[in-house]
Image (cartoon, rainbow, N blue to C red; front, side, top):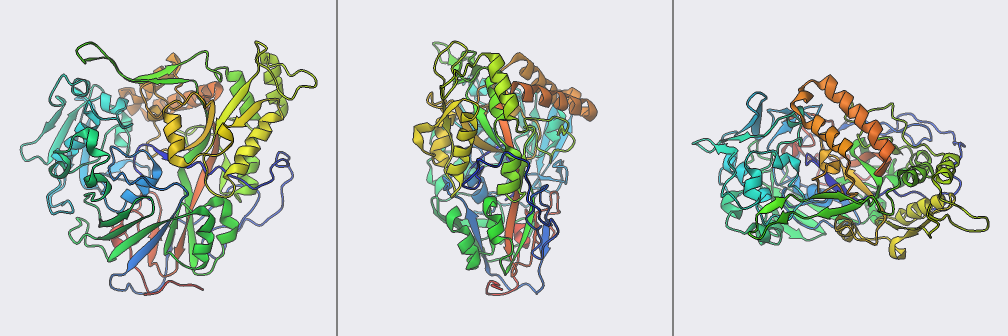
Length: 620
């Protein structure tokens, strides 16, 4: 559940109930919104629900035991146990218990000294120094060193690397581009100490974001002694990554059934202390059967429990529910260009880096069209009525959890069908009398192909709701190939800029750094809309500059950028999300409070402190 990776792809799960035509009005049902017996809040129609973030059950810890975790998902994890190579949240979920955390963070997501390494930033020298603590071992007994941190950087910088982590953050390292281009055998800006426990990284510039977990500094390690002889191009398919991954976290991987389950056993030499549990069994649970599994008390803990089904499991006996705002949001993206691979000369030297290229002639290039589509959908009603207050309309691509940088004054696009029609009329999208749909300002037919993910019983109805909403303002939006698409194939096509896709519905896990460059920067592979402007580039540079150490100045840049972004609207942020975790009453303690001390019993990142109070799960 700990997700300090900078960004991760999520299943959008932006699904609602089967009938949505009437959800555009202001008719709100009355309901209590008080605290319930199970640790959460009663379902209500006004305002988001709030939850406790910690549950502690009575009883002494039994010796050992296995915690069973149900990972609720219709998108199987691909089984890439490698921080540099994975790109989807399912893989991040299954890696969390085993791969280890190099840095810890506090309640503001700022890096502290609670991790396996410490980080020191020198603003004047433009350096970051990472020092690995003594006595930390990989699961095979070999010591973790700063050379393993260097090796992780070399994986991303390798000319044969095809993943999505080679962003501006890594390009900011002195000598990285030369290494990436094959012009150098090492990264000149990275220096190991003689004992190989300290790595000093020279950057072209440093910014305050580097003090955030996941913000500008790649703080992950890979075992050079285990993976170093495997060509980077072969890593993703290697058994050492797919079948027998090696981490330094509290639990070792014993067995992987790709996409279905992972068995973990405790690592006795874990640096924070030997885990209390004997092991963990994680199993993928389809969303359609998740509530039934909870009714049968099949698992001790459920993660990614479907929020659209909250009212069916909120009060089930034997479980308490903790919850919090997710570091994520759901969105509708507009395809506005394409990804251009790095350009090489005849000798194979890179002459131009890989980047996003905006197409001013793209079908969705007119921001009037995008704005009208935003006004046409009622996300307030979606979150309020069909997620029981567990989701709410998003007004920005910066989430409220980043309170210092979130601009709550940005109105966004509340439901306003009249305004949507006005914008289209004035922009020249004519809707002739007797015709079902509008034409382009040039008088041509306008058909918009919409890609959306499968997942749960209500994924299709939400897609249909959006399509119907757009039809009401005269836009002919059609579901891509007449169906929903599975998570992995969906993102494969979005990432590849499939020309059949005009718009798509996705979701981002933001990680713990508010800086949006990795999602909307010119060289960011995750910038799936391929939106690029000079103004946006300037904002990204300002956010990443050393001037940002003046946090008030940086916050103002963020505020201005959000206003600019929501005017240009390369995506429609649709929903902020609340995540809930049903916890069986035999689990001694479980804590999802941001910044909780990992040594505290039950802390989310303190997996070694998890314990059970009985041999059997509580059912009533």
